[in-house]
Image (tube, rainbow, N blue to C red; front, side, top):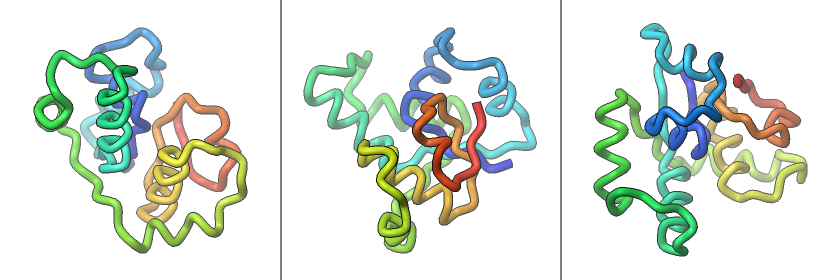
Length: 128
């Protein structure tokens, strides 16, 4: 299975946060699965870090690549074709970062690993 990590899922995985579900942890650690972190999530972390809403032990430009490498998480760039799915999404969720993750998951046929109940309302594969 190919997994796209929601931003909070990525942060919970790398910090071993108890908020992470056991199913999400099992899916992530299964060697048959591939995990991806979107550049959209990197953008979200950068914005929240810059606003002082997300404390990190290092600046995101060092922290994120180090954590991705340490945990075997690949980068998923934001491509134009994925962005075009935005016009097809109903307005169920106002968070622009989550909406782009949904578009990427649909476009690349990924399972979005997320605890967000609003995301599960979309026609996208999710797990938690």
